[in-house]
Image 1 (cartoon, rainbow, N blue to C red):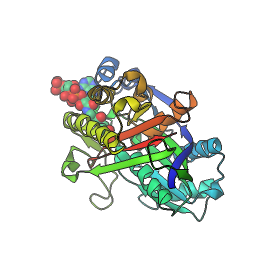
Image 2 (cartoon, rainbow, N blue to C red):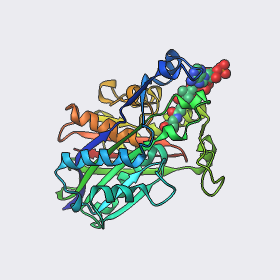
Image 3 (spheres, rainbow, N blue to C red):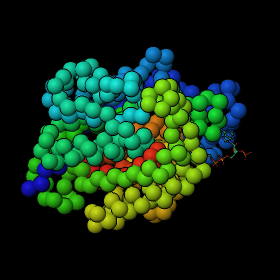
Length: 325
Ligand code: ACO
């Protein structure tokens, strides 16, 4: 009998303010046409003044808990993925835990930038499948608008703010094969030799400032398509599975061209790929749970479906989680 971490609920939250490409073009030297053509992005959400990553995370977490019927007091573990924490410390997860009324459980942040949610989900899965926790909340939450250089048109048009969350419960009774419900595999990678291709030029120990995002877009793009295709192939091989057995690919939403390039390499039809980048832009660690929640709520992802999540981000970091709903 195998113990699996099963996704029993998801939720998300987007700040109210929508910023279209046309609005951006009134203050940044860019155009709706350029942004759509290069990235597939039409608009993004931007957090209100004073609205922090923890505010977004708490709203997404409450939605996920409501949807799952799990009480905050029943949580053993909160893992929050973010590269834009409220403060350098304590972990934003601690603030979320207190607000939810889950005092006493394990709570910490994970920092893997755009791969953050995949890293957080894999971490929670390790706790649940090893019996160290039974019920977990995994959140991806970001306010990337706060670390953008609004004079750098090559980066500031690509990102947005938001949060998504899932509730996981350990369930026994799996057969140990791909027919099981729950997380079937996780694969994580990092290659710090590419640190300088995508980073924030500040931090408490280096500059004592927050800094802003710096990216060599073309280089990141090149690595992204190859690393993400490798990540998908690795997950399929580990589960003795072909791409056509997948019901859904829920990729990190960085750029429509990266998503389509990855799907094409795998011969995966576009109808099986969940895309939100057009409306959310790149919300880093929040993008996968935001996309997941949208597809669950509109009835695309249903019980029994096999869903592959994958992401790549600064570090570089990359990886995948395969789960049956
Ligand atoms: N509006 C108008 N023109 C622009 C803009 C803009 N916002 N930004 C750049 N340009 C101009 C450049 O100045 C350049 O002009 P030039 O030829 O006169 O010098 C021209 O557009 C082409 O610039 P490139 O940077 O070469 O354009 P590219 O086709 O590579 O597209 C982009 C840029 C969209 C950033 C692309 O490289 C990309 O998507 N990279 C991946 C980055 C990414 O997704 N990062 C997210 C984090 S990592 C992850 O999540 C995978």
